[in-house]
Image (cartoon, rainbow, N blue to C red; front, top):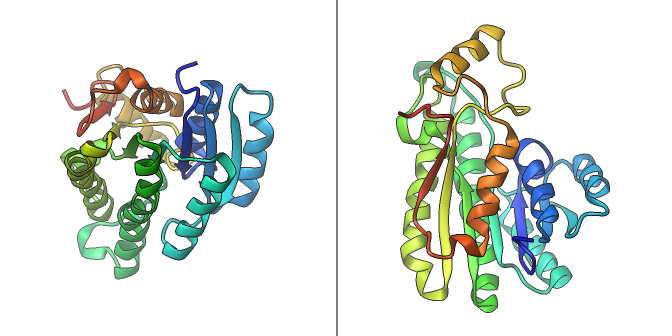
Length: 246
């Protein structure tokens, strides 16, 4: 099993990419602290994970609440003894054209996607230093690399986490802590399921592989980057996008 002996904290684990990541990590032998604000989804995730080689335990956590983040990280360390792996996946969208975007829409996305990522990573790194190893993987987006109409706030955060990732890779390497990002393309998730059919068709046509990706496609990238197979990889942005950026 590729993640045996690892203890992973996964944010945004209640649905979509985060949920699939938590399950796949447990299938690969990891102990997983699944964190989200969606308590019911966390309970069902725990049930779904029963019988897997690893374990999934849910923790209610709002990444924008620094005090709660610190408390949950302490609980995770107490429960599993250590934290070796972090997947920063919690994220939201509040799309609008620039001239129509409200301050609330801007602040909400910045607080969750960017500041939330900072909050959790800052809280987890001391435990990684203590463990003598660490892998931090953050969900970015092709939008963070190339921008997108109507997503000024989202693009800013997804570009921002790439900058933070590269900074962490340089700063934390001496502690044997790696930091990478994954930039998904068009993925079928609860975030995209309500999009109009014509938008889905446009996405597929724009993608050279002519299909939407699945949450598992991203989860497998997270598994690789968290594993010892990626021990010499840090500061990288892995595009998982069906060739969209070619």
